[in-house]
Amino acid sequence: SDLDVDPSDLKRIETLLFRYTSVSPRAPYIYFANSQGGFIGVNRTLGSVPLVLEQKPGEPQRRTWKANNPGEREASPLGGAQVYDSTLRPWYKIAEAADGPTWTPVYSSARTGIGVLTMTIPIRQEGKGLRGVLAMNLPLNHVERLLMDLNLGPQARVFVLERDGGFVGGIVN
Image (cartoon, rainbow, N blue to C red):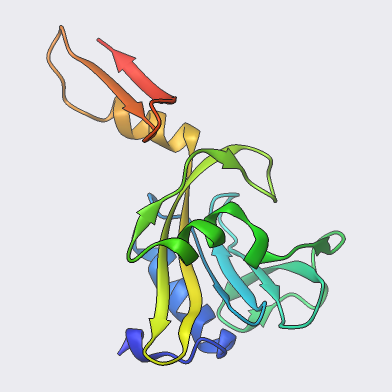
């Protein structure tokens, strides 16, 4: 099953992320970071060719490739490598402290700089603790589109707030 994947097997996880991101345009960027510093993500938000972001454990930099299928990357990564430590990112820290799936507050994406909300799922193994974090970004402009797709009455108002009351977005008909 998909849930029985070794958190250090980034190749297998890449295959699963390709599958998951192809299911819905509402989940265009899904990624996984393991507790050893490995990172793999599949991003379909920037056009038709998926991007694969990868950082091998022990390497200080995350690289991005164009890839049409899992494991079939272009020969050279795009642009320069990005110094990155997923275990220090807000989404990882929040998942690390959570007992189950949770949402982050709004923060800036390390790759794009745009405001995002991230749904995180900590992956734990009995006796071994946190093995990694599975995450999906929801850029704030996607939140606005989701709200606009709601079929609301003429007097409806919808607001999305963070747990602390901070305003994320809203619509007024």
